[in-house]
Image 1 (cartoon, one colour):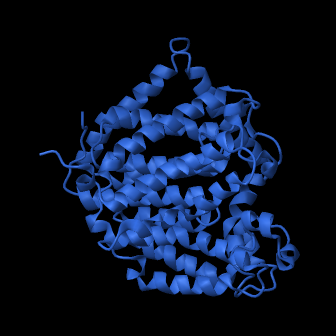
Image 2 (tube, one colour):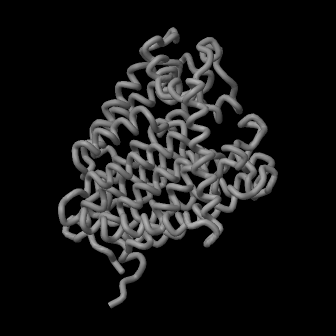
Image 3 (spheres, one colour):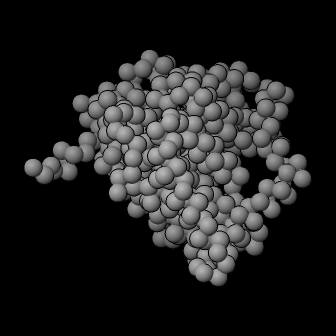
Length: 425
């Protein structure tokens, strides 16, 4: 008997698919359709609220308040949103939405994961993933001024299209580079999920290679590092004698053959583009390493927090007080101006909510990472990625794609623990 769509896919799965699509499309609309006027701002505002679509899952799903820590955190955020040091309550409201969305989504999943199965979303994720990769390859070959390489608001990022070497840093369907690099974090978790459920090894090989080259074309060091680190975690987590033999046969050997074919000069024509993407990326890493900028970016938050210069280190200046979307429309608090320059997420968390909010971030990351169905080493690495290296508050793309990626990896173990890892040819 053929099941209907509603019977095969629950509300949670449908809404996760919708969140995924809306995140991909929002940037497309902002930079290629509604290029002027307030519509772009409306789309951005809606995008910030996308994670909260999960409230429409219905009564059959436990709410995030199932976990007391989420209830306490939401109350804490409300108090910080109405901080009298904040410029307006609009700042606080937007800040609340930003600070709560990632944890709200994870809590919704973990409270209901035994009844959730994301396998029906695989075709959607595959089509969208290959589309983004192909579009990225096309954009990389095009000049800066080509319409495929525009940003949603180029003035907001200095007025120029970013380059890596002489090629553009690709953006896919996203408004800026950060959206595409965030998507790559989803992609490697998705590949891990596909491997765990025994998906077709040829598709896995092509998808992995495309994602790796796309990381080079993005020019983003952090996202490329995340891609490689999670790849290592995938291998480490799936290590067993039977599985490693299967991996070598179904994924590693085809991957080596794939790259070997590409590197045969003159036979295909794409090998020069791939080589250029890697070389441009390697040159950028080398240049920034020699200048000291790379080390500074890694240690920036540690230095800022250890020598915090704000006058309100305990409770901060109020949620949303540093958020560009709020400050551009509603203004910037004098207290924020007094603090001076800030960039990375941990520093901004303390500026907005003090070390109290940073402490709760530490607790929340530990709480949810500990619940993941992966080994202890992988939990430790992912803890560091979320807590320190990945902006899951002020970058809505990271928030959504990292959330879906973690859910996928955990869901593979929940629903397919008895499925052998084999090729699904």
